[in-house]
Amino acid sequence: MHLLFTGASGFLGKNTLPVLSQQFQISTVGLTPDEDYQINLCTTVPDLPEHFDIILHAAGKAHSVPKTEAEKQVFYDINYQGTVNLCQALEKSGLPRAFIFISTVAVYGCEEGENIDETHPLNGNTPYALSKKQAEEFLQEWCHKHDITLGILRPSLLAGVNPPGNLGAMIKGMKSGKYLSIAGGKARKSILMAEDIARLVPLLAQKGGIYNVCDNEHPSFRQLEKTIAAQLGKKCPSNIPYWIAKSLAFAGDCLGSKAPINSAKLRKITESLTFSNVKARHELGWQPLNVLEHFKIK
Image 1: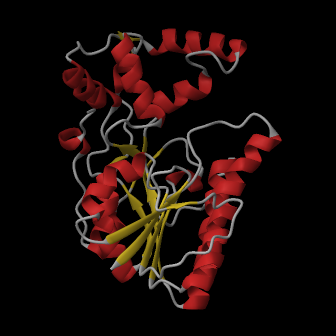
Image 2: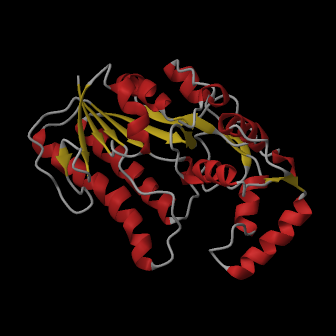
């Protein structure tokens, strides 16, 4: 089957293409010269000269905090309007039989909690969360109208080679010796091996549905710290008590966005936030990789 992969030049693509290419004929859409179709989906409804059986739509914007209205608008332009433009292009080139959208657990708007499942209200109110939620809603209506199987994945933090976001920042900090463990690193987070997305694609193409996806372990910060330190050949980071971290976070609130830690970052580090993958395991017959066993920095 022929699969169109948007955003394949990003982190997710680099970690999933080796697996996907064993199962599908793949064409890619994105902004780099390496793509089969170099297209800016947020500004263009492209003319696609081929028909595709499956769409894997991973192109999107994340991992930044907008400071201006213009920066906020970029999330909607890429995550929502880019999705609309892609669907309009598919109406011209030929409708696929399945469409798989990479969304996010951010749509729930939760900063803490345990085993949050797909029935939780979509309370996310950041530009990132709202734009992904709008794209989900559009796709549900569009796929229903055209009788297309829709799969929506809401991954948690993604792990793989050269990870972005918080996991990448942790690795960078530990490499430089500037990372400190806080309050024993007891907080747990849901994480997914990025390559697991590739293993989910054929299952979703058959069944569809909306699923949280993460591993079964929900590792603690301390477990991740030990795993990363071992691969870097470094000692496990020193730990500082919560009260010291709280004082540093208060100072960071006064210093602004350039501070290494503030109250918001401290909450993320010290509050557990985990999601339930029971629905995906039961309905799709999927078993996720254990992140602590499979995560490799290089």
